[in-house]
Amino acid sequence: MSTALLTDHYELTMVEAAMRAGTAFRPCVFELFPRRLPEGRRYGVVAGVGRMLDAVEDFHFEPAEIDFLVSHRVVSEQMAQWLSTYRFTGSIRGYAEGDLYFPGSPLVTVESSFAEACLLETLLLSIYNHDSAVASAASRMVLMAEGRSIIEMGSRRTHEEAAVAAARACWIAGFGPTSNLAAGIRYGVPTSGTAAHSFTLLNDSERDAFRAQLDTFGDQTTLLVDTYDIDQAVRTGVELTEGRLGAVRIDSGDLAIVARRVRDLLDDLGATGTRIIVTSDLDEWQIAALRGVPIDGYGVGTSVVTGSGAPTCSFVYKLVARATSDDPAAPLEPVAKKSSHKATVGGRKFALRRIGDDGMAEAEVVGISQPPARRETDRDLIVPLVTDGEVVGAEPLQAARDRHQRALAELPMSGRRISRGEQAIPTIMVRPGHDEPDRIIGEEL
Image 1 (tube, rainbow, N blue to C red):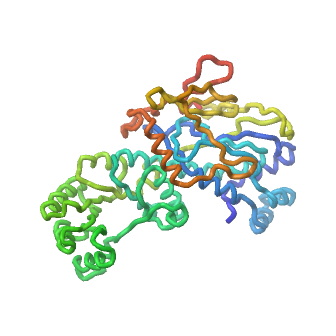
Image 2 (cartoon, rainbow, N blue to C red):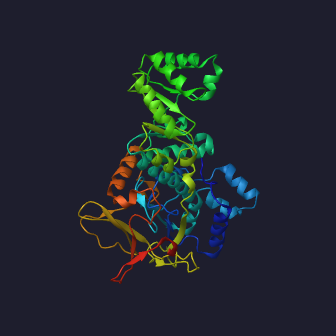
Image 3 (cartoon, helix red, strand yellow):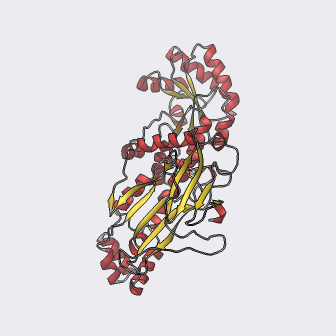
């Protein structure tokens, strides 16, 4: 399916005007980057890279789409002819999926003609802003869970396609299975699910509902125990399984109080191996508050798929360098916005993570127009994703999940706190010919 119309009208009008002016095919460099982190957040998580690569491969204009654009006077016949053969032939480099980012991190660098790169702006921003917001929230929740499993179950709280992307992003950030089956078939994310209150209400009694579920899925299933009386439901589940019940799920009430009571009851009944799963509009703050409670796992929905209060990362996509002619060998000159509060830094960026001798991250170092000086322990952040129109950065989703765990392990302990604070490590921009680096604050970018 074509992804070409998942874009904004003005991108096509810009390209058409540039064609008329003779500037559309000048070599250019665009960058996608964050100006700042959401207030109080200490780091962000890069997600959506794999989906972006798929979308760029599918970015072409079908005949029906071109007919629509011409008939609605979005483009001229001449522009339509160019669109009919459009394929991205440039190169894209960027941060690998699952890595961390900070204000000023050059997450994506697109090098091509102005016309080719301009058309990708909205597609790249929509994918990265959504997926990275979800992954950033999910990562905080995983840290607060301290090794306990977290199930993603937010499909009914967001757009149906956003739900699939959210499940993928949560898996990268360390969540356990998802309830979303589309994420299972498309991306291989493990899926799980048992029953809702409606299943209990369908039956003549709670005992009948539990028996049907146990007969179908075995003793290790999870029984939802708060439809009627929680204590009685727990007793019934333990009785029917002779103490072998896999787990109970609690979806209401004061979870800290109820979970402790249920744990005591399970232990008194001899079901010491039965796990307790809690749900009910959890976020990272509530998970943190429940860390001392005998809970074995969490189910999270609304909060994670909406970025837990930060549903977008506010990434931007800006032109940072251009040639003055169409000659592919023409030198690229830095360009930048000067507007108040939204100024940009011109020139292609290079990035590495400064790692100390103890293996901990110390800074995000961004070189302007040339790579920054690299120490032996530093880690390069930018990898090739598309080279001359060919995708080269595709990888299994597990690789992004593993990378995220390694990146988190590099963070200083202060960066893993849930409490509000500054970014975990400073972003340092190094300008050519300057001995003293600039320490960058997000709002200044």
